[in-house]
Picture (cartoon, rainbow, N blue to C red):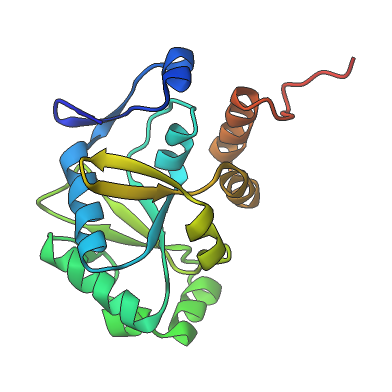
Amino acid sequence: MPVGDYLVFFRTHEEEARIGHVRHPLMKKADLELITNALNEAAVPFIVVGGIAVIEHGYGRSTYDLDIVIRLRDDLVIQAFSALAQVGYTPRAPITAEQFADPELRQQLLEEKQMKVLNFWSDTHRDTPLDVFVSEPFDFGAEYEKAEIRELAPGLPVRIVQLATLLQMKKSAGRPKDLADIDELSLLHGLPSSYDRPE
């Protein structure tokens, strides 16, 4: 639910009582709504992962970009690029929609450039850079069905990756901040964490 110019996600009453409302210092709600609406209108299936998903699952940390996984079917990739361009977002790297729709080229980006995400940038919406995964890090169809649906604004749904999959993605990434996210989310949801001490 929006408050002021920034994003504040409201959860269930139990979650709100436990962690309160979280503000994303540099990411504006209007930008996320704009991106979500553009992709929804273009009928591009996508799932929010990364920092926003961490926050939506209860750990109130800062995040400065939006990470999404889209269905990497060639026609949907082209639709996604077109929809994002219409709201001012273009890739930082010189990659066209047709190139990104090519599975072989995406594999080259992964293997030769170690490019896990393609960053989109907008001069108009500088507060909210967008990262689109170069590969589908999970079974997209299954995760799309299991994803949690939240409402950014009336009539504007967005899918958030389920907790178990988010934790697995964080474990695979293995960066210090990912491991910290795992610990904090595990504590919040009653799962084992590195903070546990043997009795």
